[in-house]
Amino acid sequence: MKNSSNYIEASGQTGEIPATSLIKPGISNFNDDLPVFTGGKNYRRFLKEIENREIVVHGSYPTALAFYSWLKKRTLKEYPVHDYLSSRIAKEMTGRLTKKILVPVRDHRIDLDRAPAIPWLMEFYPDTPHFLITLPDLLGMNGAWQWYMNGIQYPVLPYKLHPFYGVYFPTRHEHLILFDQWLGRENNRFESAVDIGTGCGILSFMMARHGIGRIHATDINPNAVYSMLLEGKRFDPGARITIEHSSFFGSLKEVRQLAVFNPPWIPGMWAGITDRGIYYKEGFFKNFFDEAGRILIPGSVLVIIFSTFALEAGISKTHPIEDECAVRGDFRIKERINRNVTERAGRSKNWINMIRAQEKIELWVLKKIR
Image: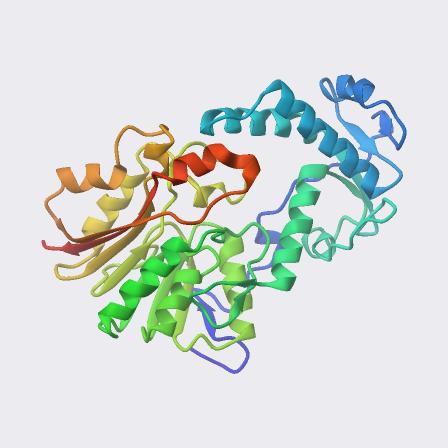
């Protein structure tokens, strides 16, 4: 139930998810046998070191960043990026090397001069004040902290969202605008809805803004549940939102009105904490439609937000939603709305812009017929 301190509740539990249940970077103990990297050292010498073992940065935070930047540039020279596949290879090779750069943390603070303060170091590891953490994990944590503190303003909401560490949030807006326009056309037709794989909760908050009063959101990532509970302490979304830590439809036995799903758009393997919001494994859409077919009742509506990026990039040869609709008789395509992509990447990513010139953002509206 709603109360004055939290307008979003977790399904099947009271209170909040403890920090010990959250997904967070791994850490290691101090090791005096590891080589020490300081400013002024020869980069090429330490490149040979990290090809075989980890190193520990001492001195200043800018020193660590400079070596990290040098490694990325060197990798890009060795593995130039000209399309999606080459970008994945370059990213994998960069990650393989940079994850061997360790940064010391003492008393829950980065033990380097001019290092930023990251309060999550205390929240995530309350019983371990001194440890080593990889530089990429630390950079990811610091970037996530900035997003969390500053918030993200989306054109479809009148307030900012503050996604917690490790929670997927959209960096593009076109699909959100397309969904917002569809919600506006429906004119408060739905009283309840399910938001599958909610992430930062953007679709739930959009539906609440359009007058849907009861929303059940699910996410397999415990950090997303925690993030939504924190959002519920900041503002009243204007609807009763229940968040459940589970995959797909969670504990729901049936859906009578609306289910909304913004699935991953690209086939591939997971490498990081937010990758489940980006990449899907083989069988993912079959499993989803199997469950949707059991839980949605006849007359209910399933909305899927998708993109043709994988097709245009040559990663996929077929469209997973088209494939499922072609072999199933329990859903009818009511609408399939396409929009051209207008958002572009930076100049250094011309290969992405070539893909986006052909890419379509899609809104699939499916009606359960039996």
